[in-house]
Image (cartoon, rainbow, N blue to C red; front, side, top):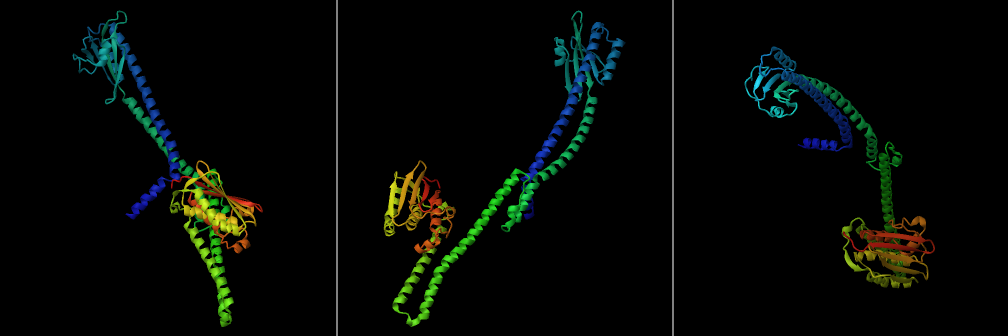
Length: 485
């Protein structure tokens, strides 16, 4: 059973493959014209031969009918000359001739079977009523039947009708011979087209085989030489490989980022532990000789390192929870952003005053939006704290609120030190610090902006930073007013 399903699965894969479809298209393009040509050629010959036969028999019948009209054959059917003509014509066309008088009675039958009988058919009636020559075809017995009136050209008197039947076996035999020859040609064409279709499908897909081989070659991991793999045969294969190269480079960047992240986490967690180890060892080695003041000082330092370690761990947990790809984490409710921002300004005003920074709130219009207030508050608070901490003495921080028809726009601007241009694209990386020494002094972990960005992405929003070194930085956050999540 498993083998059966495996076989069916492989067949389905084959039928859905581009190679099979190209093969099938080329095959149909090659075979259909051959089939149509054979059919049209045979049919054309058959129609032409039939028309020629009808014309020939009709002419011969008309000649004999005219001869019958000029003689007194209807009074004396024993005329040997006319009977010979009728017999010769019947033998010539391997058929039969009937002479019918105006009472629809058969007065002459070359077969000698129906004389004295009556024949009332549509063709005979039409001829008797003044119609010209009539023709029909008996497909079952393969006979033509021609009916012509026997009419005096001088007086216009209608004597009767002549019905001539002619065999079409000769035409049928010729059609079969022609059809056999056409089928032989068709088979040859099919074989040639099969070879061409197979060769063409294989040739056209060789570049894609190279692409598959190139992709398979890096399944086990990124290879440094992947940039050198090129398949320039087609524009499409070149575009695929370019996209593949970009993907592999991106994967390498992700791998490097993970390694850097692990190294940074290890370093950040190791530093406080190392400090606590040194401090605790000093106390142990000092023994009873350590005075109370020194003991207290060392314990305070250890407590600070514990707080720092705890802060790093909490930020890492927040970063994991605020995964920007999992929008199911957000609990959306309609909130007044003005109230939220004013509360954040109120909360951070003491910190701003302590740092000698003026905290300003500017609102162009009250805005309501569907947000997760806790997560968005955390994101905006991180921006405001950074703006306060990395500012100049007597500087300022402005928090602005505006909106358009679709988005709420929150801006956090400061008059701080600014961010260098080469660092502006890395500020959201985990543990990245623009000014490492200053960050250490103020207790930064390098995770705040990463947390902020993930929280904004959870709201399907966007964040953009613009900065001038020595003049300040502006972060612009755009959040949809309504979200269909």
